[in-house]
Image 1: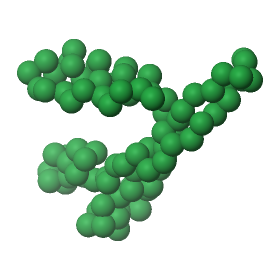
Image 2 (image 1 turned 120 degrees about the vertical axis):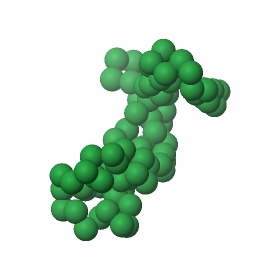
Image 3 (image 1 turned 180 degrees about the vertical axis):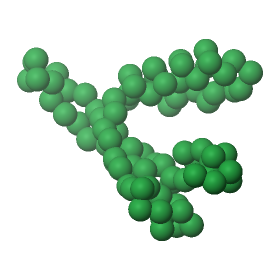
Length: 88
């Protein structure tokens, strides 16, 4: 890896978006349901020629976003971390 690449962050390499959401049923109680959000990460065009960088996607629940936000607030207290939209 050259010196320029060592300074790149995920946001420099990937376009990251929440592209979809879907309702799922709980495995414990059929009547309980929850929403999952599809997060897609795609290599930026300028970087996509690197074969080591691939697209990926993952489903996450609202509570995962809360956990991430709480971590960011605690770890980077000098940065204003936006409030999450209300849970629906």
